[in-house]
Length: 183
Image (cartoon, rainbow, N blue to C red; front, top):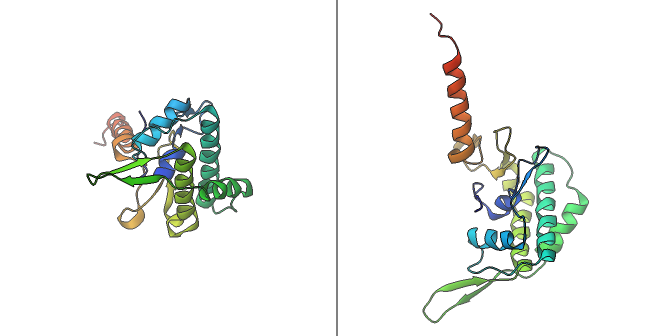
């Protein structure tokens, strides 16, 4: 099961490598089946695209390229040329195919390459557009999720209040409870 706290598929995709600063980050794309599941759980596709080991390798390469661009934008650094090349190559690909059925329902079926193309195009829009100024990294030290801060006043601190926000508030509460009262 994958998490989607960032509000955009491209940034949620970057989050499939958790706790990047840890000695051993947690890899959520542990195999082709995990990539298939991610695409369907993210709502990008209605059926699994049938990822292969080669498709998984491409996905991980794209994920790291997107992260490189986001990291550079977050820190006001020049965009890494290799990351720009990888993201642009994927962004030029075919989009996810959508089809209308006779009953009016829509299906989104695709190949891995088409899903990666959509993620790359979204990343280009975020990093190269005004939302790039709203990129943030989660304030919980163990978390490295990035998100676009659309909150009022742009003061959002965590990737998700349900997970990191609750953990940080609980930690702060416990710390206050341990302090002797001033009397």
